[in-house]
Image 1 (cartoon, rainbow, N blue to C red):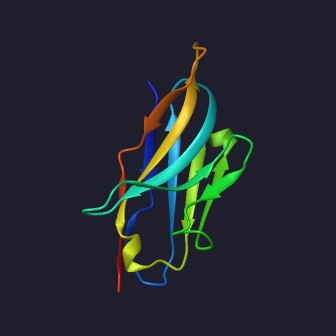
Image 2: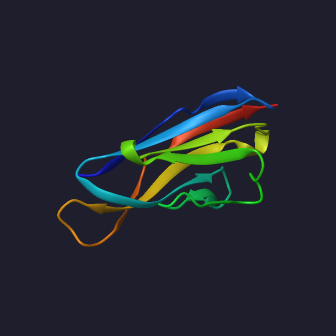
Length: 121
């Protein structure tokens, strides 16, 4: 059974930094796109950063220039380095991976449990 486990959330002051990690574990043949999205209170879920299997990245305009997504394919892990944090970045952050479980020929979507990031002003 595949699962994604996130870590690294917490409380930080505005202008500070945090680094989130998300590791996929289980019987995995390959991992395609990995991304981070977030949900703030009374707001819709927002896709903020994505990284393809080949390393190409894409960012939402709200985080462009402040957040950096990266991955370690050997560890099936995706990271989100968040710098210059703002109070409006406060949200629950979720990682997502499109991956191919071992013994299958198709990709499935998996999400982590979410990690809270709170930025104080």
